[in-house]
Amino acid sequence: MTPSEKRPSLPEVHRSISIPNSKSFWRKLLAYAGPGYLVSVGYMDPGNWATDIAGGSKFGYTLLSVILLSNLMAILLQSLCVRLGVATGRDLAQACRDYFSPRVNFVLWVLCEIAIAACDLAELLGSAIALQLLFGLPLVWGVCIMALDVILLLLLQNKGFRYIEALVITLVATIAGCFTAEIFFSRPDLGSILAGFVPNQEIIQNLGMLYIAVGILGATVMPHNLYLHSSIIQTRAWEPTSEKKWEAIKFGTIDSTIALWLALLINAAILIVAAATFHVSGYHEVADIQDAYKLLSPLLGVGAASAIFAFALLASGQSSTLTATMAGQIVMEGFLELRLPPWLRRLATRLIAIIPALLVIICFGEQSTGGLLVFSQVILSLQLSFAVIPLVMFTSDRRLMGEFVNPRWLKVMSGAVATIIVALNVWLLWQTFWDFLISHSG
Image (cartoon, rainbow, N blue to C red; front, side, top):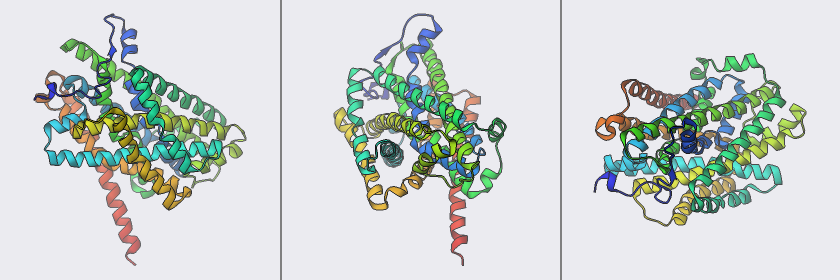
């Protein structure tokens, strides 16, 4: 059976959203708008908050350049996902299963599940922390309550994929509104912000800064988003002609680019608020979301600042858990071809995240969540190479992509991004190992 004859990705919503025949640019852009925002929530999830807060409080505005670089990488990589999904009708997991050996696929699947578990761990903990801050609920109860969002996902997907997109876009708008207020309250220095977007070589020389920088990279360019985007772009029912496929690639790329620029602004806003509030005030070790919540209102002199922060955190956690659960379904179906009922697939995916989250809280205590959030993002970054390299390989292969293959300039850029990601991770591992040897040499 050829790849084109196999079961499509997310069959219950595959090609379920019609595309108008109108020549209107805006009507078509509206029809394709949605998948980019589902992807973008992974770029502003609670894991991002932990790394951005830690980076802003400890190093001021310096790591803004890392957020910008990570976002530019994300825009390029997500455009490759659109290209792969439209041109082949396969998501990244399915393409791996079609063209790699069973042994390689098994390894890639395990690595991807680890990445999704790390991502879901951050999102569940973030949502649970928000409930604790707003309502005083213990973290264990918060994790259990937040796990019920799988039911919401089932209900919305049964109604239609547009309902999921509308909910996520509403949550993203909520986060953006909350941080617009926080920026206004914190009154950051514009000159320092602009200087922060200029790369600084100290980032790769300072191990502590590099650790958080790689965490930001892992929190921004998420492995599971590459699988997710290559699948959900196929919810659009474009005509299967060359012209319409090019049109789908164009509008799908515009959609994700706009959404990811919004994610950049929110990510940068989190770090800017941390730098303007904590770093400037001498609080250089604020890494926990709980500590940030407690300090925001007193330092800014605005009683509502902490509550707005927690409300945005809840919106962030809820939006990103929805998409991570969907990515888990795509990965499980794509790599393993499991034919499970939708509710059972999502329940299995959710349990992979709930169990580690509960074990961490019970075994290490609630005070360990801040460090675990940053660590989870570093784990994501280490897994990223195993998703990026196949994506670049597939989209650069003319036999697979045909006329939609990456042009030479895109091959060079995507290859450079893959190389940077691998090099950063090797550098981090080497620096960590070397630091361990030095610290134990005496």
